[in-house]
Length: 243
Length: 120
Image 1: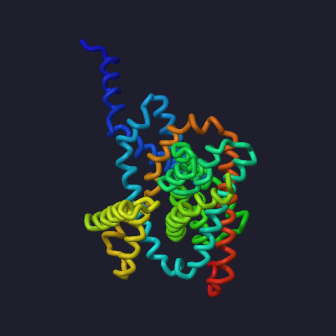
Image 2: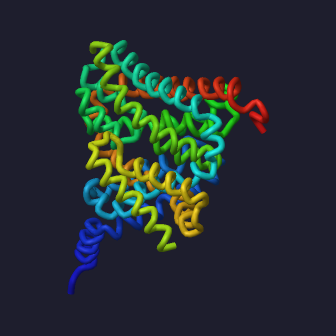
Image 3: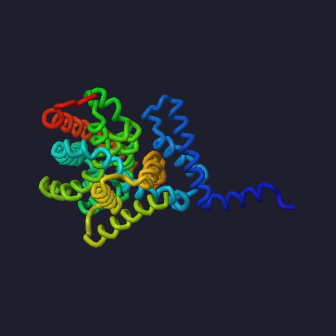
């Protein structure tokens, strides 16, 4: 006779290591969080992405499952992120009129925004006496993570730290967007979306799609533009600042 | 449906290939997005299959960020070392960046572009 606890624990060993569990848990958690978010009046503090992150991290820590093991299952969801990024061209195409009409303002806003993002992060870092490594890891924090990690490496930051900071920046962006736009009286969805995508990359874009398709399209545009501009601008900026 | 996903994947693939060939500092999917936009502009409409797949992906784009987001657990140690500077820098910088971008774009579009019907 096998005793039940032993069976259960071998079952758990199987499940914890299998991609099936992490994939299922990711999908179910996210849907619960969407439902919960609706119940809580769609508050940005309980945005489904943030809520899911908190719940899944807690679950993995408690269950003692490593991120690598989790990612073996979650990678199937993660893979689609690249394809969804390509698909951002669709709303962009539908709103091409807006993009054309706002072309020069968009370019100017992108350069100003990207410079502000880097300078303000560097400024606070220097002012508070952070190490050079921390400051350089902070500088590209508004850029979408694959580009941000590349920039961080180039200017002497820690790419792994930057990856974490990029995620937190995205979360902060979702939290502050609604009150900030109310305060500044920002009403046009294109402006809302562009500023979200520029300052909070992908998380901001997901949040912008909650506002409208137009906002989402402009957020997607901002991610691409900011990424390209920052990749060239940041190393030059650091050099000219002489830090 | 299958045609739509194939078109998206082909753009993504071409994006990845181009980025590597030209040593571009941009992720492949971003270049893929530009490629798809060019294709759509040349064609002059969005094929139904592409629209269907695109809608399915973009309606759930928040879910797609969750696996990367959970990766934050890998960075707790590094972040906790300078957590005070880091939290202040991130909060201040994100607020300032979003505000400056929104104000600049709002100001420029109000004065230059859409005099006809700026806000509905």
